[in-house]
Image (cartoon, rainbow, N blue to C red; front, top):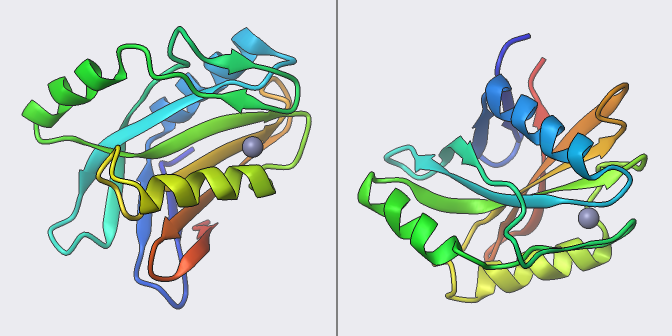
Length: 161
Ligand SMILES: [Zn+2]
């Protein structure tokens, strides 16, 4: 299995996701089955800002709320985590979460939350990435990758095979 690359035919965005991070996501999902879980994405952008490399995936902050069809990602310790990364030149890139036994497509609520992040200035991230892992982490699962641009809206990327 090689690292995953997500891309779009009309927009120049690409997102690189290492296998090691997918394994970490799967482990976070297994630990919370059958509830949703998630965390944040940290990494770096290419110089032209069109390509993002995800380099770190967090688990759920302590004050997160896990339900079967809902995940509220808490904020405990996130600020200090991000400022540590900032010193190493790494940034908040977006969010990931788990849809247990369901499709990885972003729900309406997911899209609304991402628009809020894109338009807000809490994370200083106008084009956040959303990764959703859907399915069963022990059997068959899929990952969707979207970008929420304050200019172009919701952009679904495709997986390069
Ligand atoms: Zn969701």
